[in-house]
Length: 302
Image (tube, rainbow, N blue to C red; front, side, top):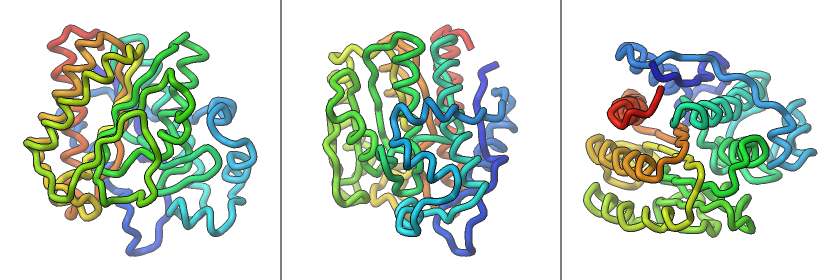
């Protein structure tokens, strides 16, 4: 039975009317729990030394004692709280745990993470630490992984990840995102595909299929998949016009690519802001359900 890591038991106190759908994490796990396909394990806290391989030491230390400036918390989008600290450490820890599982069993998943707007010395867009970047440097040190790739299909550009690895040729960053969407000051990924508003399934899948061979040429030894579902037509922050079936086809395309590459594969959750939030939760759950079915058929040990 495949294992997924979660951190929804660490609650972040948010004011009424806050736009971040914190409840989606619990709902995703509930949906998957009813399917009976997965074993769930609370995500461990990430080690601080692993986080500091990526992030500025002073920024990390200040966050861990709730001492960032008011402007820094506004940029992150969350108020300071003990819950935010625990949730952030568990979110990164879940991706590290999923990476260890992928190295062992072929693939691993974190029911959180994908915090791709976090830069070296500041957070942004509901992201404090960049879990994928932390996991890449952890794998480089502990698993002798030299070449990595990030497939970021969240509707918002993975600007933090792009900036962190801009001078690191061993890490290929792909971002397929909304051209006119946040962040409005884009960074330079290894590969950027900027989509027009209202892009639908057919064009989206055509663009994705066209770009995946460029990742193969990079020769990654591990692939991280930021599987945000905010491209849904129902998403309040997305501006694209994808359907649930279109997202399933997207995911299967990525899974087939990973299987062809025959390298460890890590799935992190990413964004989703549909109303009602049940639509987002179902879309996120579909990613992991489809992965379990696909990799079971591929005879990947889980």
